[in-house]
Length: 69
Image (cartoon, rainbow, N blue to C red; front, top):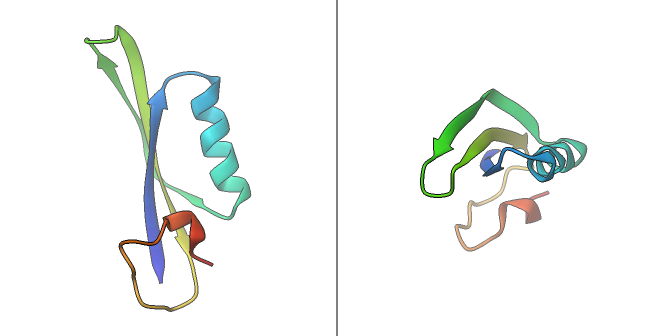
């Protein structure tokens, strides 16, 4: 089964660490990163989709995606 996450945050090193952590846990980049200007905060925000192949199992929307093996 393939699972999907969309990581988002301010365009800073913390966001880069979030993506790097996901990659170190076996997640793969899915598509290009996205950048938008958040006028309310005056900051750039970014997002990156990641996917991971896990064992075939029933999907449970109550289960955290990071808990799938």
